[in-house]
Image (cartoon, each protein chain N blue to C red):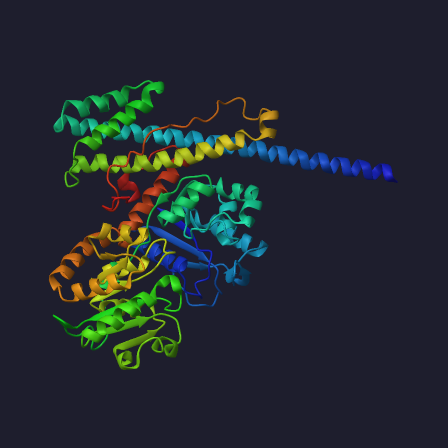
Length: 166
Length: 386
């Protein structure tokens, strides 16, 4: 009976399409959750660096660094990128002494921040590219959440791992 | 931290990736972490205690050479079982874009995944065709490491993502304490004596051996007692035919050497020469020569300039210029103070490549990957990063 094969074929097709859609929705959601986690980790590292810089500035290097650290700590979301870049510039301007434990804390915090920034950028890119696929847009998957946002700051690394001009 | 590392290639065959994985695992163990390495190998082959064999690797012709890999349902089941039992805080895979255990591990992983890219492979047609599949692999990776600037550049330009550049490590103690070969390096006075070293495939054009040969032949004529020590794969007759008959007894050929003999070889010469004309992405051998405390003379390639701290830790000569190389060799052999100056700087540079130091940087990437997965920040002390 050809009619039955049509039914089998059609239900198989529907099943496959449904499986693909569920998998795609899961993928979009998984990547969004991960980009969110990365954003929280990045936020924590930004606060740590600014706090370490403020502690250091209270003891040496003075007002300008302290002000930059305070501004970075208190910045509104839309001003935060500029404030963090400013702090990076201030930290580069003063010559940090790696043998001093408080300087070393700032250097280590900057290094960890650089990694968090790198990972966050990659994961946001993955999440956005999954979200931007035509099928995902068409079915408006993930519409309950805003698009993951990049956090666009300069590389905050203070010292190069080897003293080689790159 | 509980760390699971996946090596795509079998430990039965020596290779750069395998050595890297073993050295990294040992360095992490040395820092007090729990490490398990999954690699293709027979159950009965002798392996370090931290390696879990995943079954025999099948030779498969790939990209002009033979790759030994394990891939398929059986391997896949083993990978999943190893991951489930290991309860790892982080999974670290090497070369995940090859059809291998690494790719299987990435696809079965749930938690944070760190991937290291060794080769600077450019976008091939196969890669472009499989872009959709590769994207699924890539987006399961949390953080990426590239071992050289070139590998990193490929990541950025072709894989559409960043990568942290962390160089290959070198176990400095293994090199700095190696005993020189008997009778080497011998005397080196003004105008006479001295020993030069070369390691690599002397038949391969980009290794630049002909440049060293020309410089050596010219210099040996005017400098009695100058000797050349060559190690690497190749036919001895083929090597000696390249030298004029009177100079042949001043060339010593070791053939292919083990890691231990490589260290002894590097300690046996006054100057290690790297006359490469290109194609080097990192220059591992230079860090090893520096670790051995040997003065390095290398062609002025980007990769070499980076390792040699812009020329402060070793002498750079214009790439491919045998006359400049000869002048540099003659000058350095006559100037022990300059050699000491370069090796002193070399000692400093090589501490950045010492495995425990490199392993700490890898641990920081692990921490970043774990943090990006659950959003909490790990303390330096807890992770043993400091």
